[in-house]
Image (tube, rainbow, N blue to C red; front, top):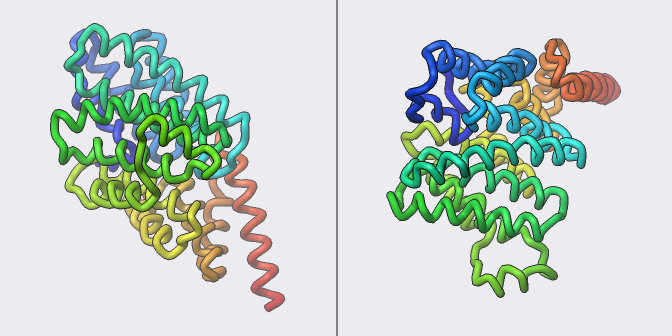
Length: 296
């Protein structure tokens, strides 16, 4: 059974789609599995087919947008990837809002919108566009509040809240006035605590929380904590070369160069056209670490 790593990986299992065929659902599951195994050429082709088959379904648009999102956050943060994610995810947002308008009690769409706006907020913050980050964060949190009103212990709602608190805590001091005027409160540690509760839950969203904790602890240069979550992810999804790459990076930062070199070398042998930048970086890192070890 595939262990999904985002809070929406089970959407196809819990969303009612009476107008779709078994073939459509099977193709969606195949695309999702390919996505989490970083077989992105296969996944992209399947999602494009699904978009043509059902123009109103936001799910293939969501997973398609996650490819540049993961590249941006786990491999290389640049404006091109940020724009690609924001453009792709906008379509998913619009379709989700249309579905929610026609069915206000559709909690799956509430969940989807909560996460989409949360991720858009994180990307905007990564590009230092804090006004957009705050606006997207507030929009996402409004959906999270709706989830919380249904069940305050929902792990998926805790992830939304954790992302929101972290984003507020990472806003530069010169822009804190904007959050204060809006009456928004939250800090980085509050964000981590919410994510930890979700990560420890017996829920399909626990892996998503682990992914975010790995990334955010690494960003905060708390490498030992980041490594523990990277190890969990690579154990659960051994085919995912992005998580192997992040684990190798963290190992190098804490001084475990031999193990880091082995992982980089393993990734460098992979054949993923969409992730050619990752493979190139891994090859360069493996060579650098080999030279350092030989000269030590």
